[in-house]
View 1: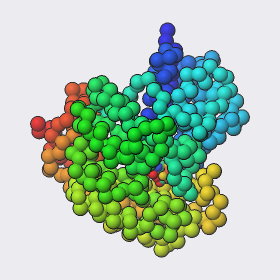
View 2: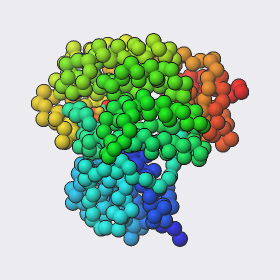
View 3: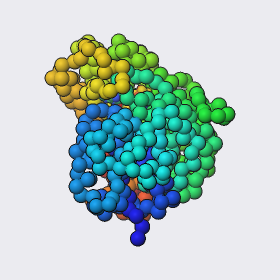
View 4: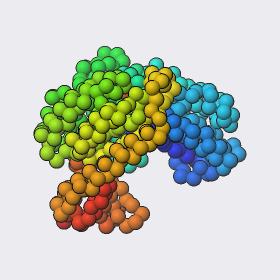
Length: 433
Ligand code: SAH
Ligand code: F3S
């Protein structure tokens, strides 16, 4: 009988793709099949996130649970950013863990599973040209990594310490991977990197210098690619050429993630984000002017060390000015290995909670106003997910999540949908063509 692999993925889209790579390698070289039942598994893998403190705490309690329910001879591996960050400490705290594999060492999965108590967390390791075997959780949307690591040094962020320096994956590999995904049925290509619009600054070895805008053109030239999404771009690198390509290229979905972090230029400086409030507003305004139906999402951190009432008011001002279609907001969480960990001007936790609440309440009110924009409209939806409640779900090009009654046969198809009901997070409708 085939060996069984149970894998849990926490954190960002890059982790989702790393997990697909792990599954592909273990299937092709070791004969593992996936299971959704950890108790049946011969190998349990947790692909971790370390960007905030909470998930790290959760890891050890979860490991304990897996250790209790697993088969006697099953192995447990910890992968991802917390693996990179804590390394052998994980095996010290949870001695039943069999191996620890860092976020930049995914290609070593096939060997590390045979080495008990091995720890591979080299953040200089270069797997930018490693040819992973194929596996995708969904055939309709294909995640493709375009770079590894991050060259920025945002003072709050642990990612450069867990994923290392930025290296771009050669454009010909990305294009080949996109072609293959299309052959296998994907219409949507989702390009991934910590800082996608910084693409092309450094390759390992000799490669044609291609920037992100040019990469977008090349992927969109592939026959059968109907939609392109990407995350995350950095506001600093949103030059005119990039925004104009975004606006003009019909295959690029009109949904942009613009991680603001803070609306205060002073705080942005302390975060080392490299842009000002005015630059951010200018870029958002240019986007809205060129792409009237664009939806803009963002990430915001409240209560970064030194954030005053006035700084926070600046963030609220940007929130009100841009009217984001989606906001991911977090309380600042001090992270080891970062510069801000040593900042002493911390914000009182009570005030931090109040600010987060105030921001989220205001954002909910904005969403309640914005949601009516699609009511009664006919929109084009690409269906990619079957829900257990008798609905199929998909997205419009500008990222509105839409559900219609229906089944399997809609998956992987585009259809025109008339919106009949709207809420903050999702719209409901009926297929009209
Ligand atoms: N390169 C990505 C960021 C990855 S981390 C980007 O620019 O979008 C994802 C988000 O987590 C960040 O945008 C930030 O808002 C949040 N985050 C990162 N470190 C954090 C910290 N120490 N405390 C709170 N939120 C944090
Ligand atoms: Fe982190 Fe800033 Fe890079 S948020 S991932 S250091 S762009």
